[in-house]
Length: 185
Image (cartoon, rainbow, N blue to C red):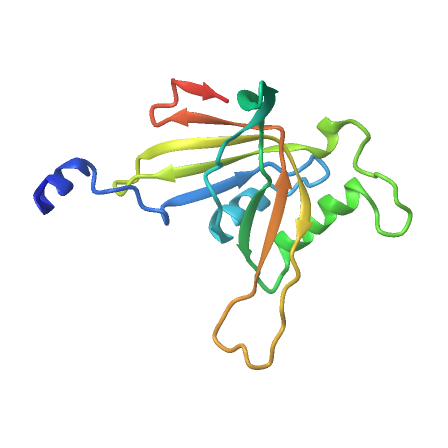
C-alpha cells in the first residue's frame, strides 16, 4: 500500500481530539463550605488523565500449559497537577482534606468515620475545538492519598509553582457527549 496523506486525513473526521481542552471538577467534603474551591480548581488544574482500564489475569496450569482467564477489574490511582497561587487556597484545601482523614499528631480521623464523610466524586470533561463536550469521566468515591512537595529554588525564575495530588477511587464511569448514554465500568 502506498503512502497517501489524503487517505490518512480522511480518517481523521474531526481533526483529532486535543489534549489541552479539558477541565476538572472535584467536590470537596462538606467541611469545606467555600464553593470557590471547585471553580478555582477548574482554572488551576494544569493536567489530569483520562483513566485507563486494567483487567487482571488468572493463570492456571493445565498439563504443562498456562491457560489464562479474565480476572477482576482494578482501578489505578489518578493524579492531577495544580498551579499554586500565593493564597495557597487549593493546596491548603487538599492538606485539610488529608488532615481530616488522618491527623498528623494524634493519628485520628476528624472528618467523619464513614467513607461517605471523606470521599467525593470528580469529573474530567473533555471538550471539542468548538467548545462542545466530547466525553466526561466521573471518578466515584475518591480521596487524596498523596500531595507532592513543591520544590523551591532561587534559580527558578519566571515560573509558577505546581504540585500534584494523587487520589484513590472506587471506579470510573464514562458519559458520551450527549450525556444520555452512560457507560458504567
